[in-house]
Image (cartoon, rainbow, N blue to C red):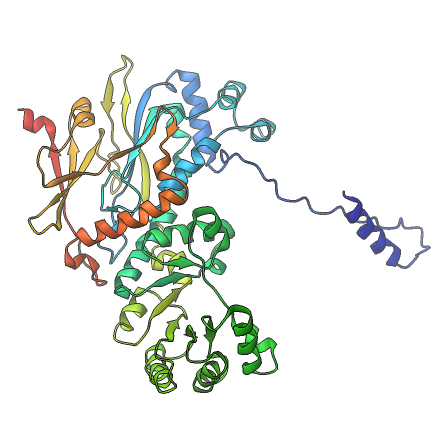
Length: 482
């Protein structure tokens, strides 16, 4: 306990009345310990990953060469494509997936794994290979968005971490893509931090930008990933002041006339008039956060123009999603702000991605395809390659899934100009490719998504129910060899 906390405890006990009833005087409670800050992410996993490792170490299969793949069996209802996000965060976490003294002590004290497993974990470093779809790429059912190759022991431990990142981030990016598509080129801003846990809020901001959002209210995300940050004032700032005019004058004095003034705390028409009177016709924007946004936007635009503030933009917020944004397409709205819907995947908070073993070495060291046959959960054995086929107009027409003998699939490259390969190397012998991480990785992912979404057929952007935007077609290499 620090001296400061001891002082607080002493002052509390000093304030208690003295009792002479033979009962021992209560003692000050110790301060709650601060959350441990550990660089390791190794315990962000499920227990059965480690118990599988223990059994595999015991029976000698832990060091068999394996290939795991991440894919989703289906898209959420109403979705015609998904957007891959989170790959960069997986790669950033990989060097921190190590078992240090604190993690090992916890595992030992709780009897979770045996001594042999603890010794293995103490020296664990992923030294395998990872390849996958480039972040920001679109995906469809069965797309092998990530492949992890190494020993069973190395690769199985990463399952939970990889899925927890990719499922959430891709859900957010997929929702964000639908929203920015519905916005038709008007900027969309992420402001959902208060609707998610603190670390999920950072991940959501990153994923939303990959899906096309122009900025975020989250400062940690801004600092960590180089994102543009936005935000001016809430209703509480207006309510703090004696009058709305006082609040606006204070904000303009602090942030300049180019700021955005929130005009619906009281009466919108009066708020707009006061905003222009205080900031002048150079006022940057007004924000509407309640009511009939379409109708209000029409009225506010007319009023701003009449007041001479023709360049003042209109920002709308208030529980928007892709459907609300689409409904405002004809309204004079310049910027959309989205919170709850984007950080929760707009009704699809996960992509249903799974991490499945698709090939493993047999007792003689030869890589063999393996697959589940469970009802409604079957998988396709063997390593996959993937490519996208394009028509003469430059739009995607098919997702090609390449299967066959392992060596042939691993070495496969498209032989025609209408095919674009989709798998890129990301980790080679444990070394992370820096192109995919940090601010640079996010910027690349956002650019990449803008390009690949534009390549989809027009129907891909419809918000109504329907089939995936393009079909997935199997290409077996052994059939070509026969």
